[in-house]
Image (tube, rainbow, N blue to C red; front, side, top):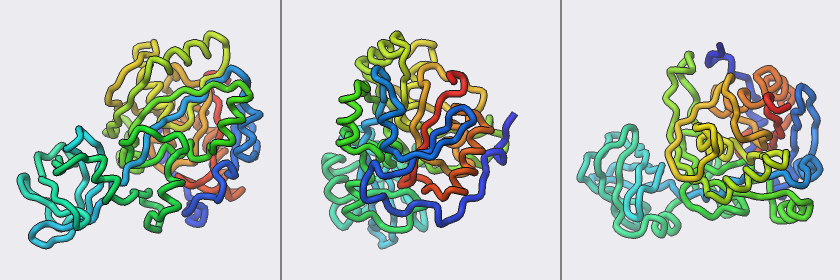
Amino acid sequence: MYSLSDFDFDLPQALIAQHPLPERSASRLLQLDGERLIDRAFADILGLLQPGDLLVFNDTRVLKARFFGHKHSGGKIEVLIERVLDNRTVHAQIRSSKSPVAGSSLRLADAFDVVVGARAGEFFTLTFPDDVYALIEQHGRLPLPPYIDHAADAFDETRYQTVYARAPGAVAAPTAGLHFDQALLDQLTARGIGFAYVTLHVGAGTFQPVRTEVLAEHAMHSEWYTLPQATVDAVAATRAAGRDVIAVGTTSLRALESASQSGTLTAGSADTRLFITPGYQFKTVTRLITNFHLPKSTLLMLVSAFAGYAPIRAAYAHAIAQQYRFFSYGDAMFLTCADHA
């Protein structure tokens, strides 16, 4: 039985990537094949996949979800939108010296006012005066992860989105997809690799460490996903042909596994609080492309469940020794499910 301390590790600050590389596919790739570790370039993924394999991408698009503003009393606030509920309403985190009260209004970006509604757990309900997506795009700021020490600039606004992002709603990028440029996607298509898509809107909770030593006591954050019937059909055809279903990122994996809980992959939309820890039996995904994750994070627990606890510990130790770049703008791993190896 694993506990929180089993998922801690020491990471030199210098290995936390602060900026993306000039070229998306120029990252390094650490392949974990059973217990064997192979240092590669990310572009090598082309030769690691076979015709008939299926890559499943998360096509969510990151919102410019951070706003700075003030109360009408003058107090400064910072707002981070967590979820768009409809075209006028959101749930958001608010940082301020004193929590705003329901019915009050807040001035955001010196451009427009929002009205504070009821609390929803840790979030506030905010009502916008016009179309949420338009106001976010026009006045918001891209919310880079908390471990990146610079404010988002024009380069980040391009590179902290995947090239196939199309469904706005996330406050964090599905970072495994950041390594794919259009040229690599075209090469994969020419090789006979199939593509399918899910949408999972990544929330700010993805960066939160687990704080309970007993993992079963952790309250998993909720995220909204949509799985199209076309993706269900593509997965079924891939599995029938004996080929691999490769999740591009833990968010794609989480959506696929969440939709597989009945034992059959099922199309639809739902909230998921699926918390994957070692011992979980994977139902759909056989291989995974992923970045390196934070200590004590639910994502480190997920990859440990997928590839095996000891192999992941060895892989992370190797990555640190070889000075791989970590986290959102960092390098990648290519994993095979321990149950499938």
